[in-house]
Length: 184
Image (cartoon, rainbow, N blue to C red):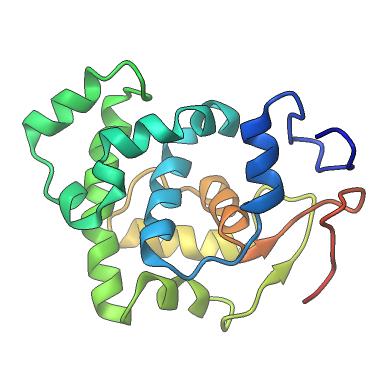
């Protein structure tokens, strides 16, 4: 796994992280189910490392019914308490409540635009943005502001920028990385 030069953040001692870097991060995503999963996981990352979240990803999938949007948006107090007691995931009360709230708003956006993917990719006219060395941008500012206006939580510009990178709206592999490119 150490045979290729990768982005500085990809911990080559963690095979799960290397696989994520090599096969998933920065790849354009148009599937609403995957977009929802990544939005929820990125919101749980706030104040933590992505590696911490990634290492718990399978536990999150199990705890959150494989991120089934209709199920998560219908979670009540009992299910949220069950999640708060689950030692295999990040048990932050506010982040759990935000996940349920954000699921409801995600559904509303998908209904309004035909899909969440159409909403998200519409900000770039369905084109990938190629840039490196940033933690936020005018694009993440704009999307963050719109999501907050709609009522989403834990969607600040830095979280949204990381989300855009994760789902390939923003392509940010570094110049020394074997996956680097400047355009399509």
